[in-house]
Image (cartoon, rainbow, N blue to C red; front, top):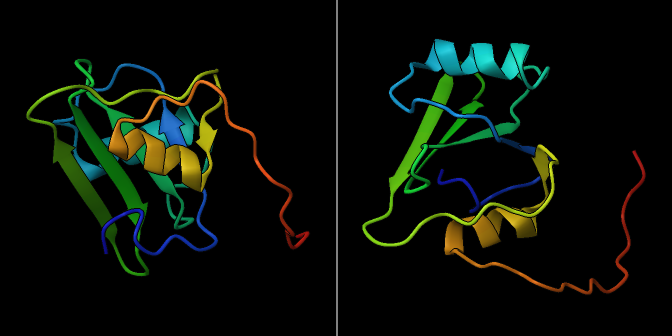
Length: 115
């Protein structure tokens, strides 16, 4: 499954620090635990960008093992969402992948199930 194609209850976390994308599954999971203070086995997606912002790597747990998804842009850079938040929503994920920098977003009210 490619991240973005079937997002349901998974949260998406963006690591905003510098990250060497040559790191292994275990080293990225360690960043998730220690720096993001999240559980890498939760099934949530953890997004890491290369220092030049041309490469992106996603780590998530899929029932019985880690999965990594990796993408390199041939031209341009990934645009980080504004702010300091580490958690991004589905629309922020799509914007990140598609290179959209939204200056003004006015979201219409939608029903949300309270957990």
